Image (cartoon, rainbow, N blue to C red; front, side, top):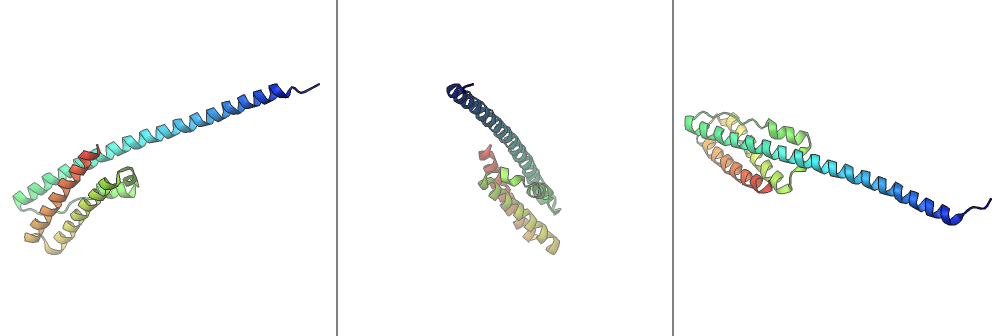
Length: 142
């Protein structure tokens, strides 16, 4: 019984091409699925942060209007950081948001130490300016 090497080599090459193509296709489908999930998570984070910052602007306006100085809640940003989701954001957006939330935490510390007053008003103005910049960066990233 003679082995037909020509047909055996052709069959093996076709089988190798089919296996390679199937693996390549599966890998690309998985990568595409991951990219879609990350894009959805990125959009949700941007929307969530935008809504939070707009709420903070209203909070600042009410604080200045009534002279009732209360601390900011920054737990939303802390949750994003602890969840490791900040890696989904472009670096410029992350940098801007980190700067903004750092100002909020600085205001909270100042409020704890001094209890409000002129320094708090100046810090609130800086927080408001920083929030405005972050909202601009977020709008550009959409």
